[in-house]
Image (tube, rainbow, N blue to C red; front, side, top):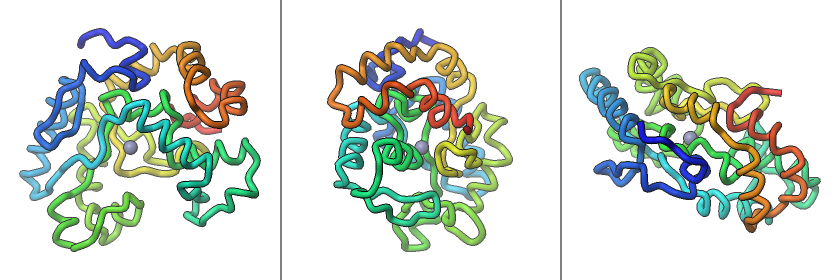
Length: 226
Ligand SMILES: [Zn+2]
């Protein structure tokens, strides 16, 4: 693997990523591993496709700032709408990070992580994918594929960092991560560089975010719980 620098890891430079035919971007090793898993899924009549892969810093910053200002809705873990005007800065941070990453600290910056779905099955069900757990369990359109991934992801080097809610990010049965690279990125992650990038950025709420940056990265990016 080509050495990754902190700008790659924070979503500020994607020159090391490869474009897939569907327009998504992944690291070369991750693309290879994903395509092998996709072929194995196809043998089981499952249409394993990506709905989200690489996202850059600016995109994540825009999502964060719109949520901070109340231009995008904030939800509880149970999916209930929160009253934005009643939230303290700290409550806002946690309400945002339950569902969206802090810019610079999103696993979607890494090129090792992606969200998957069963494209043909979703099309057959004639619904629009919303990325909610019910689509990935029981008789949801991605349930069979989700079972396949739970069983076989490790054979291809992938794991599910948000398989269980432990006090960080809400459960995301669709989010997979290529372990050999993601673990290396976690080891090399430079919190001080992130702190500097965020303090120089247009991030709203940074006065409240920066003093607790270490804990936020552990709790949400790595999903270490509280
Ligand atoms: Zn994801």
